[in-house]
Image (cartoon, rainbow, N blue to C red; front, side):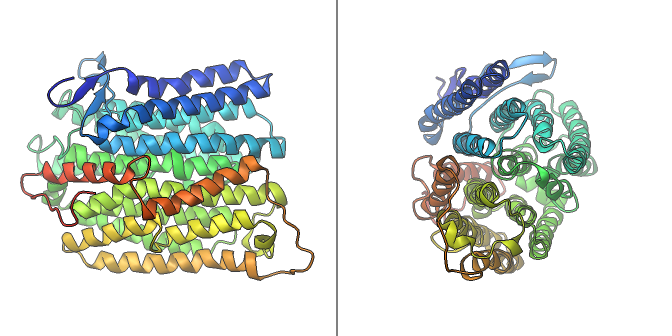
Amino acid sequence: MTSEGIVFAQRPLVAVVVSLLAAGAIVLSRDRPNLREFWTILAAVVKFAVIASMLPHVVDGGVFESRPLELVPGWSLHLRTDAFGMVFALLASSLWILTSFYSIGYMRSGDYEHQTGYFASFAVCVSSAVGIAFAANLATFFVFYEILTIATYPLVVHRRTPEAIAGGRKYLAYTLLAGQALLVAVIWIASLAPGASFQPGGFLVGTASPTVLTALFVLCVAGVGVKAAILPLHGWLPAAMVAPTPVSALLHAVAVVKAGTFGCLRIIGFVFGVDLLKELGVDVVLAWVAATTIVVGSIRALGEDHLKRRLAYSTISQLSYIVLGAALGSLHALFGAIFHIAAHGFMKITLFFCAGSIYTKTHKEYIRDLAGLGRRMPVTFGAFTLGALGLAGMPLFAGFLSKWNLALGALEALHPVYVFVLVLSGLLNFAYFFPIVYTAFFRGESPGITFAEATPLIWIPLAITAVMSIVLGIAPDTGLHFYELAWRAAESLVASSPATPVMLAGGEP
């Protein structure tokens, strides 16, 4: 270990590779379903254990780092576990365990075909998500970012219906074009700062003219903004709801859209730096784009009767809280944005798990058809209610903690108008979530109601994530230290900026 707390070890690489190995084992076990599912669960547990083993050192301010593997001069695959990356890696790996059990229950309940490809693709997706989290430079980030794009496509088209194929093509069209924009930016940045790694406060200051840096920022935002579903780059996300519900949960909570918002924060905080964005004047533009996405996404959700599509537009809105916090650039705004990655993950996966539970038992997909189901499926709809309360920003839930800090950050940044945006969004959240709850519990015939929850492999994971939505609101540092990691990451971004003193209002967690 060096004096800076860097441990050179292979644990970051092991955390990435373990699920890639599992994908191969899953393919080889295609004729043995129980063995295939065993590899899925084993890889999920091992991946989480490896990542969790690095947590104490990272919480103490250290990092684990793998030796760079140089591909070509100036381009190397390089993994590092900083506090920011650990938030995403812990989220993805912990939720993968629950999603693995849920997926087994979901796939068994419907006798779905192509299950070997499903579980193998899922493993590759989570592997690439952890690679994105631990990427130490733009080249590594780009490689895993594009692997995630390709690995997700078979999941989106899993049902092989015309609608699924169309949704998959739209997904690829958006994400591959965005990938090309990001590739141009990565090559261009490499020419300006050869071999540069991510560092708090960025590394592009003084490397080029304001015009060039602005063009680079636009390319980067276009590259990651598609997966982050920023308007008008969001069209693929509702179309991708044709996928099986566990895939929708993956898209919204574990990997894909989180990779986009994580990429926004990584590029803003660790490539450009918040001060450079202010000097270029692009921070204000990005903040208004995020605010518009928050409001418009919520309004579009109001008009959707299809449950998963309503949840999709809710995700579009909620993701831009993270982008808004990154654009504001103050301590509490950055903390709220980083913490919301974890908070939104647990809350939104709860809602998609509930949608899948409803579908496996009733094959109902439209909100108008849910009347009375709350009394038949109390665990499912109770969990849905908790997840909805959290996303609406109710106190004692994880969503309140992240949104409260975003509001504080808006005041710190002297942009109080965004507090109004956050309040309006919370009201719209109530407006589109609670008709679902009311319809399920208070409409329909009550006589003769029988309890009919889905299989325990489905309802137990959604109950756990619902409870975690409360735990992260009341005791946010419990277990995985999401709060402390998010605070440490935000503080490093502000402290690294010589023009911006560290603001300690509220103190250390």
